[in-house]
Amino acid sequence: MRSRLTAIFAALVFAVAFLAGCSSSDESAKDLPDAATLLQQSSETTKNQTSVHLRLTVEGTIEQLPIESLEGDLTNVPEVAAQGKANINFLGQRLEGIEFVVFDGILYGAISAGGQLQDFGPAAEVYDASAILSPEKGLANILANFSDAKSDGRETLNGVETVRVTGTVTADAVNAIAPQIGATGPVPGTAWIAEDGDHELMQAKLEPSSGNSVTMTMTDWGKPVTVTKPAA
Image (cartoon, rainbow, N blue to C red; front, side):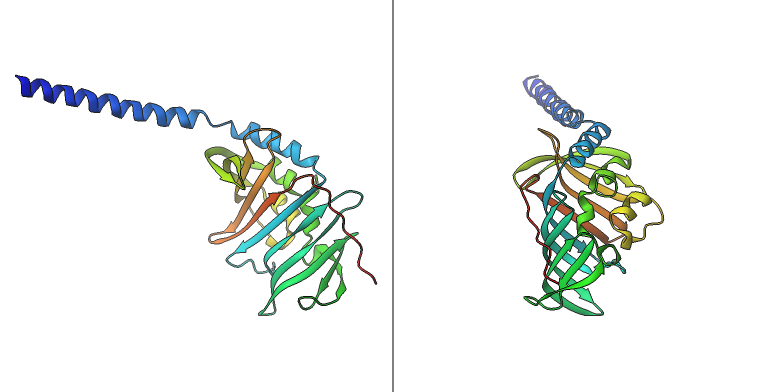
């Protein structure tokens, strides 16, 4: 009898522990903010941002986008501009630490690391990093054009607690921020949005095809940035 009672008691303890674990997991999932609301809030915040530090990385191959990685500062006050360094693959040749400036829509770049900046014409024809801050074409527009969005977890990025939101982004929004991607249909996207405060966008990822993606990581939102037009 004693052994039977012990077995029953053990089974009850296991059942209670199991149910408690399920309850905890369910509550954790329910606790995530609504994805659509979070995207809307973050889009409005992003529209009003005037500057940001950007780190962009390309995984895999996006044929018309020669950039492998890029890091720099972007601003739209008093004019739209950007500056930084990039690693690119140009005609099969890998170039590292190439300085660039985008000023008044024109891309200035150095052919070699530490070289003199030269006028390469309209930035949009190569890659216009400054467009990322555009309310109509940039990250705010990406956030506003998510479909089938869901909050599926939390991650800490650069010390900020974020909610990871997944879904798809319209082809028009993807091509507006990076025409070189040439999207023809909805593109899988992920946004990491600060859970607290003004819900700043901390990271965004677009995956135009399997194994090929562009990830943009943002820090220092609103920190003053000064970009000087290169000498002619």
